[in-house]
Image (tube, rainbow, N blue to C red; front, side, top):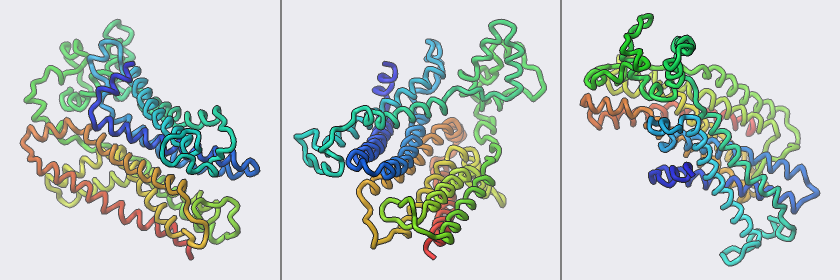
Length: 451
């Protein structure tokens, strides 16, 4: 009931994102049901049905990733002091977020079932009744348990993924954790300190970093009474004059850049070896594409390498923006890119992987072979749309995460044109780095297969 009330009371932008999740879930569910229809109409070809089901894993992964990005930007399920006071802490709010995601995906699955039954001819009274009756095995009864199992994959996987990723974590430094364990044996103070990271600590840790005493110095008794949160009692003028709160120091660079480059190189090498090996493909690619099963393995490795290397490349892009005596604009744009490297870099790397894969598929398309069917087109549109929507949602999440920094800059007198120029500079820098990289990877992926 709480999930329904939070869903109903959200803003129109939040409803739009949830509606997009429902549409993505509907598309994936329809592809799964079409796989079931093919298996019913072709009982003599079980390997073909398994292959079609395996090709549905990519839209399924893209849909779950998009649902996770939407759940992270949901403002109605963030920890707040009022909800914590009535027992709705981060753990229960995480459950509410997972329930909301399951509701959106279930709505999409029900739409997919209605559309599937309509195309089979089981539901009448609308246009295109039974338009795909032959393809969807309308002459055979639909096994309801199998259909419900396939339709339940997207809501179940999406809600479990949201629950695992958004579960409460203790983000305090190691010293604070040791102090919490040591104070835990002294009554109420230890219990308050143990709960603090999931309450005010996570929201005010930037101000605490700016206002806390130097390392190794004991906190004052007044600070101990408030749980060490000295920033709450500090005046507003002190918060406005602290430079770390306005422009925080960049975080440590992501560790995945060397691993991502290694996996990317391995994927390109597998594709080149597949072309030299030759032979008749035992596992045909959808849509009349030419290639062997090793091509698919190479594509997967290439996509994984770009996704892993994305945060490191974004952090490197932010560092390059600050090189050679930067001004205020370049310094602000570079610091934001370095701070948001993990949040923005991974979806950006996945978008580059999908774009390079689409370019390679267009290069490998054989006009004399079978035409690209409607299901293949739907799968491609679903994957590309979900990845682009995930990137835009991650950008919205990054904007929400730095709202305090933006407000501090506005209080200091920064003009709005400067903030817009910094955003345009960040977008241009990312496009200048990832655009040529995508083209180079796409050319290298398609070159061995067309030579």
